[in-house]
Image 1 (cartoon, rainbow, N blue to C red):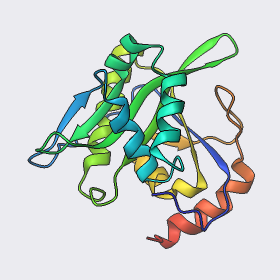
Image 2 (cartoon, rainbow, N blue to C red):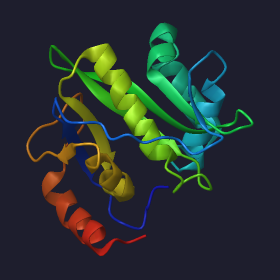
Image 3 (tube, rainbow, N blue to C red):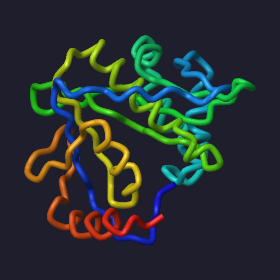
Length: 193
């Protein structure tokens, strides 16, 4: 869930090549699944449930415009975690962004539904995404954009070798390092839950 009680600032994180990926097994009854046509509705539901979109309808419109034109890529790059009933309860994209003439591997749209958070599903998704990304793009710098509202995710990403960068960015994302860091320092050191 996003914590909108704190000021919003953009945060850019980068994972350098060669870093180990922790083993993060899923709890019993859960499995990693790939995108298949029709799963866009599950993606939209998950993203709306954590506050990334105001509604699943808004999320599905965004998904159809931005990602659905690349169905072959979605099948390789969009992962879900499903419960024993086959319900998608978490998602992550092993995507990319263009920075000038360079294509940068990047993590997009990581979320786990409330009620399923704290079970290790997010860690398993990030680990699976990184393995997938390295297989697709090679072991090189991997970026992600997040925000101060997602400070709990910043903590999780750091467990996988991502570091907040001061002066760089990728794609078209802003980097608000100087404004974001005092907030993140306060929240992460206090362990605010």
